[in-house]
Length: 286
Image 1 (cartoon, one colour):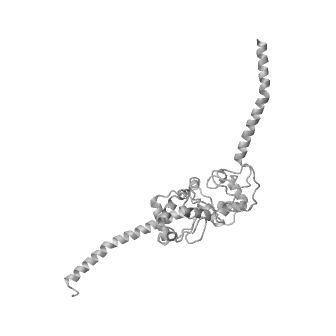
Image 2: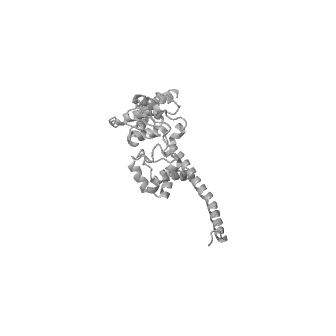
Image 3: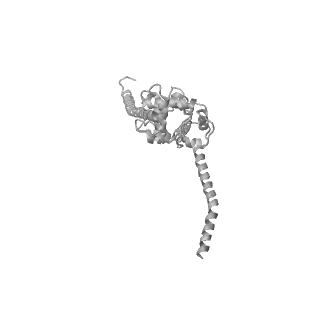
């Protein structure tokens, strides 16, 4: 076949047309993947990085490097979407992870299906998101002051950015009075539960838990407050376990029941006298 034959020219035109038609599809697919990875990277930095790394080792939760190869994708999407529901259902992998990581459950981050897909795309190829694992926006400012951390926790020193004092929702063993709130978990052993100082420091940076975001999303701890609170939690976790004492709720019920008993005893003591007095007054009137 001659190089300038009509057949060769016709095949060359068809090949060129196929390349031109296919190129936009590949470009759109590549652009879409890059956009999804970038969105996933932003989600990871905002909601996941406090507890996980990608290639940086264990933190509060497992290192997620290669997680899309280690776990079935359908399971991974379901777990990211609703970890609380999977734990409640008794899923064996979720239950094993909970036990392995100090019984600290992954919170439900309320991610949309599109956000879950973007996060999966980033976990599959972190390099496609840009600069890889994004560093936290702030970090504890070196050594902290445990005494100042206790004052911040208890509200004796107000948080600089206006956040609520920790004692409103949490307690720590050894605090004076009733020891703090009960809406959140006891933080006496928080450093041990969160995998050490690094994990606890990371959580203090972004406070990623949904129940805390309403208070702290726009009022984060300052780096110095993070350092002081971390120092306080380290100190509190190293103290000897306190002797078993009556809980505030038990004290409440004990005082209530005791008061009721005193009231009934008073009624039992004084009511007969009052009744005799009333009877005598009625007889004298008759």
